[in-house]
Image (cartoon, rainbow, N blue to C red; front, side):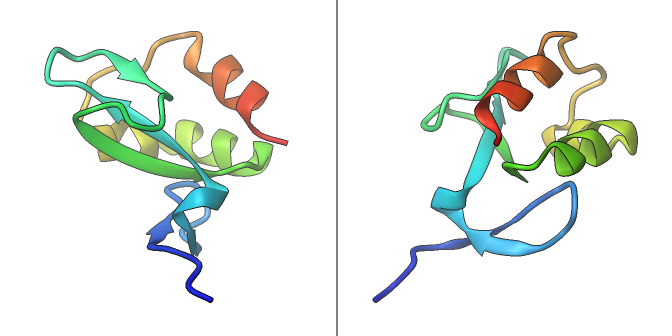
Length: 83
């Protein structure tokens, strides 16, 4: 059975099926969202607090989304969607 497309977590750099990861997207207007089908540039994170922290602390999430600054409430939203 096919697990679907593989995506890479920007926190730990491991490859996983897309449905196991949280998608973070940035619209052309600069709005950052965790909606699954949000249009625009996207990045994927494991549902693990360590991956979320690593992606934010190292700047990899910001760089993947090509934005200058991440919203302050994004960390809390990602933690709620994780495990």
